[in-house]
Image (cartoon, rainbow over all chains, first blue to last red):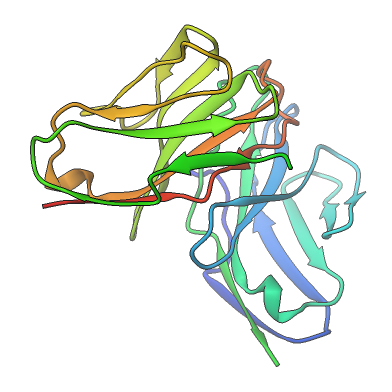
Length: 111
Length: 115
């Protein structure tokens, strides 16, 4: 049970921003939200994570709703190399660090 | 360069012939794990290790063995492979300690076909 809900697919144009939504309405107060992506023929790759506040790094931004029931991964300017499956994952405190992957969102970037 | 390596990257074998897929990381990570990825089923954890000599089952451990004799290595052993173990396998590692903010690093994958 992935415990997160994402759209199956999204499409974007190159150099435009992309907002990838994730619903995690049953999240507990200490669960972190992680995003990983998997490019074609590669292993998953960490993108970003957060707990309550919005987060930025060199790859993306993560906006977490005030009630923490949803979050949005923001790619500020999509490139063709960003075409991948994006996974939104809840990670519990004090657990086995197991990542429970759902089906993710397949992002297509059009030139 | 910080990385997780897996060998072999591709393997075709026959039912019942024992095989080992190696995984090695150069980041001094305590936590290592194995996942398999199948169409329609996504990525599922097979086994994990919190540290040297400490291993535990994930969600789909049947038919697999692991060992963690050294911190950097975490081999996946299939004693008697069967066709339903045909899959894409990924090794992952992180700093460990059960911290939920750990970033996990994944290897490039091993595509296994069991005939």
